[in-house]
Length: 354
Ligand code: TYM
Image 1: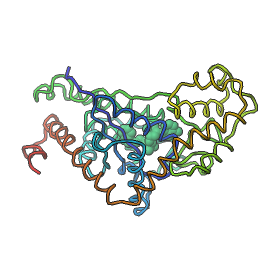
Image 2: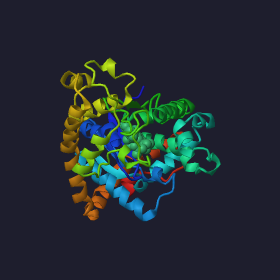
Image 3: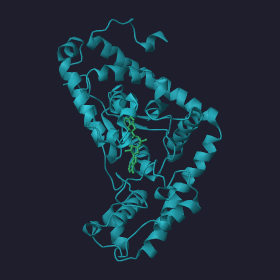
Image 4: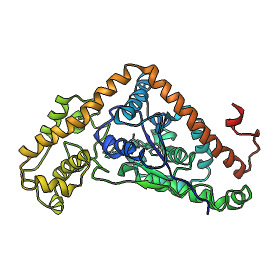
């Protein structure tokens, strides 16, 4: 079996309204992963964004805004590779190869497509249907071993594993003949966890916090100022009971569970530890404490995002540099994939030619 060194990849769509769920479920964890002994790649997935209509001028701003959020949250572009997907052509190229590996039946099971396409499925773009295959290509273009994401991406990561395994099996002879041992693609490990793997709406604890929720009060945006953050927490839906002292007492109390989970994730502690301090407390005590914590954690990020987005030239330079570094890795993978599949190619890899 080939040995794969640890490589972390994840992506965020530039579709506007980056929120607390994206931060706690993904971006905050990206920052923590930098301290592991691994190469990290963090990608603004603009090719994914256009699977639903995006206004071109707004899209450009949103790409820069997500990049600013990465940097403002603490991702260091010298240590991690920060880039946007459309600047590295190998993502789309590998997606085509994977389109020929993935099966229609696998994609037909994807629940996010069903949710996003809604009733008018005939009118959804083919890109929206193919979205998870492009996601597999994002990850496997770098032969990434670990992918930190929120819980809603679990099924997509299972598909990535299926595609990697089918490629490895379909081409096993050719993989060995080209000196890659028994397996070319790793079976990627999803990193889903912590107290905020699924942050729920502040208006309805049974619905995921989402960019597309029509109520702005349902989510805390990363661009919200201190007043807006505090007000949204104050108005968050709750039940009339005090907080329980055991985690089991949060069952059947989705709103309470959500707020305790948010507190835990922001403070870097567990739900148990939160309840050790707040068990028995009323929401009139807990909510102001949560609002204070959220404001101290998030307001500096919003401020830094504003500073960074005022200088788009700097952001574009970060993306250009990251894209060039990403492309060197992805080009090597694509050269090998072309050999394995049986294509005739032009010779030495891009690294040597450009
Ligand atoms: P996107 O932009 O929708 O979400 C970005 C990240 O935020 C997480 N997330 C949440 N986590 C907790 N609670 C929530 N309410 C919540 N809402 C969103 C998502 O799970 C995600 O980790 N398909 C991906 C983008 C992508 C990608 C990839 C990810 C494209 N290629 C390759 C990993 C690897 C997405 O939906 O992003």
